[in-house]
Amino acid sequence: MEAILFASATPVTLAELTARLPHGSTPGVALRALAERYAGRGVELRRTGDAWAFRTAPDLAALMHPERQETRKLSRAAIETLAIIAYHQPVTRAEIEEIRGVAVSRGTLDLLLDLEWVRFGRRRATPGRPVTYLVTDGFLDHFGLESARDLPGLAELRAAGLLDARPGTGAMPQDTADDDTAPDPAQGGLFDD
Image (cartoon, rainbow, N blue to C red; front, side):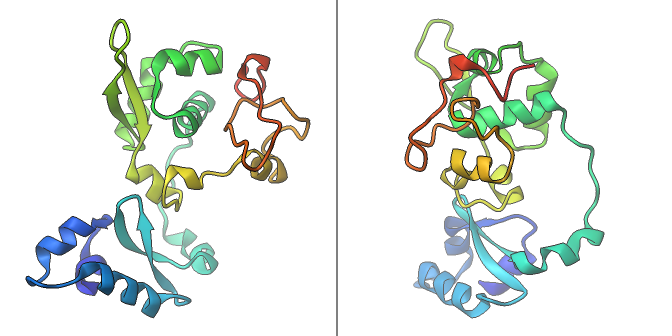
């Protein structure tokens, strides 16, 4: 199992591991043992969505930056669209436009689909049957998240200085568990142009 995970360029699902291991193996038990063995080391076994992969320990990540390829930055529209999809998924294009207050260009969604950070979801059972958008496991892996529930809430975003500290001025996540002052999207804020 260790060799399979090290050799894979992408995270490996439990089903893929089960198919590659000898009959009668218990991959769940082996994954837990492997995660314990690598805990606190330079490389750690991490869960990403429904899959597992070895990743550089967070305290050593800064040392890896010279090895990374620089890619072009996303436009503000792409970042806003990605954030809306991540926090409001499954979400339709019309809902994204309503939250942002401006039309979403086809190129913005195409870019996010090409990056494989966003994928098509199910069609809504409403007139016109609009397609919905969801974030992918690739998005979760890139940002080191186990699931979309691990995205920062309002309190964390404000503490990091990414949102105005005044209550009710952002249109981001609706995180009422951490913050009882969930913003009203009709008030505008973060996504206004």
